[in-house]
Image: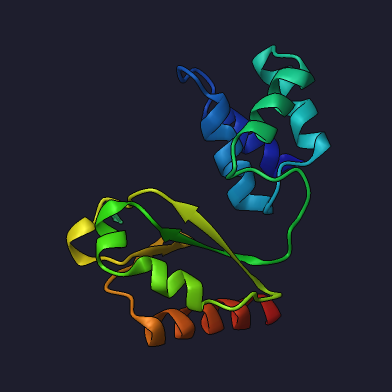
Length: 142
Ligand code: FES
C-alpha cells in the first residue's frame, strides 16, 4: 500500500500521469490489482471504470498475476527480414515464459531482437532464443 502511494506520488503533477503510474505498478507488482485501480482512480480523480478501461485496453497491463516471465519478440519488418518468423515458430509453448509480439524495439540493424524486462537481446538466432527462454524460465522457477 505504501509503495503504491509512493508510485502515485512520484507522478503527481505530471501531465498524463495514468500510463506512467500503470507501467510502474505493473513493473512493481506484475499486475494492476483492483485495489490499485481504486487508489489510482481516487488519486487522479477518475472513475474506476476509466482506469480499468485503460488497464484492459493495453496489452502490457494485467489485472491479475500471470506468474510467467514475459519475452517480447519484435516482429516488425526489419526483424522479419532477418528471420524472426522462423524463430517464433521454433519457440515451444512454455509454462513459465509468455512470448508476446512487439513492433520495433528501435534496434532494427541488429535484429532479430527481443525484450525481456528492461533488457534488449539482439542478433537472436535459434540457440540464443532458446537459451534466453530457458534463462527466463529459470528466473521464474527460482
Ligand atoms: S524491426 Fe525489430 S527492432 Fe526494429
